[in-house]
Image (spheres, rainbow, N blue to C red):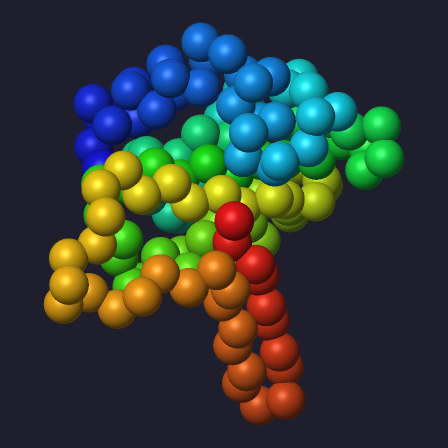
Length: 130
C-alpha cells in the first residue's frame, strides 16, 4: 500500500482504537497508545506508515512504527531498519517496528523474514520485525 489513500486508511484504522492496536501488535496487554505522531521524514518517503507514541509500565515510553502494505516486498526489512533508526533519532525514544501485510505473498515470493541483519566493515545492525 502506498500513496495518499493508504496513508489515510492506515491512520484512520489505527485511530479507531489505538490502545487495542498497540496491544495487538506488541502482544502486551499493558501497552497504551499516547498519540499518533508525525512519521514525515523530509528525506525519506514513508507514505503508508503510522507512528504511535506508546507507553508500557515495564518499558516506559516508546514508538510503535506501523507499516501496512498490500503484499510483502523483499526490500521492506532494510527500509524498516532505516525508518526505525530515523524515528529513534527524531523522537529520542526506542522503536518497535511492525509490518502488516494485508494479502499473502504469491508462491514465487521469498518467505517473509522477521529479522533484518546487516554487516559492513565490522559494523553490525539488526532489527526484529514483528
